[in-house]
Length: 488
Image (cartoon, rainbow, N blue to C red; front, side, top):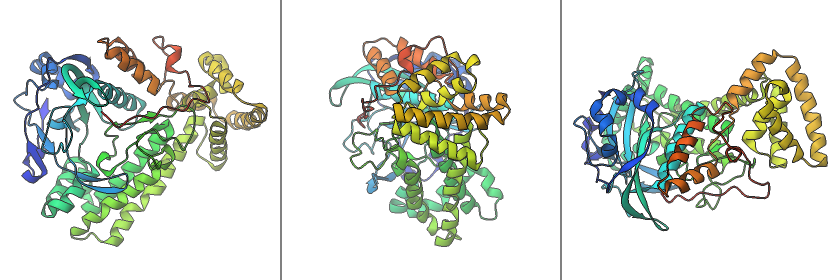
């Protein structure tokens, strides 16, 4: 691998160097060969031979520089003070095959100075959920952390019950969060200039060509964040804990806790059982992204040339960027051009889904069975299932909408419309029930289901032979989608 351990050269107040605390008897959970190849890990015999021991914290390769990061954040809208890597270590920074920076971050690595009341460990169930979700979002084409692999161990960890300790080697283009700047502003304000230069030079070097590199950088972070959240909304993904310490400066999805993929369409869905007010409900994610950035940006007023007025200019593109990305994506999901008539149909369609609690993923995919039934028998079955769930009045709404929709499609090149629909509407997403079946088997020492789900999610836009009905069956309309605990 091409190592580029630069974070360790920053001001020592920003981190604490330390090795991981070994797990007892780490064993293979799953290994992501695609990520290993992209990193260059697969070309290193030492890394390949000892990957279980590395993830288990028993062996630290010579070129690794493990450290825990200090950061702060706003959690559920309230200032939480110092946080930091309480159970994770930035093990190494590398350049991947495309010359892009990637962080190798070991989650479940043991106690750090930032653990607070935690034990520094991760349990198997949350490790599997994060491993599969990072993989799922990546294969869906949504910027996200991924993972090299995970291990399970004999280390016992207490949560609501005693569980098996595990560790995950998370791979992300950056682990710098909005909360890093919040920490600096409160505890080491003299470092802000140096740290801002580091963020620009490492992750946004193109901003150096601007007349005002800092403002160009801040605007780029705003726009990337807006596009990421638009991608979440389009695919029906709810992050669950959009605290400022859980948002990356690169606009990549980071920190999987009580996440979920939408099943029965309910924009007010709350997937975090600790979110009593619904702050992080699916429909609120765009506004929360804006709120987080609005909290983050003023810290840069300490820098020369940054004023309240120029920061307002940096934040201003958020709404337009989000709306353009979301509306264009929504039209592509319907196979329609981005224009007023298409958007009108699209929002009527979403209302039909919401009013009848139809399955979000299946319903969008089912439209291929309406547009090109002869070529899409699987989608035609989805369409039949969907329409049988509609009541008398809803049937009439559907008939009226589908007629107007087909009239729009008939004016287009069918091949292009079908291609847009096929490549923007997945057949498979990581439903909570899918993840839970894999976890239940893994807790019995059987990882075949983890592997099957992993392979299924590697090609989410294609119907696959390894799938079963449970992978795409929607829960009953009167069954609320289960909320997920933050405990991990």
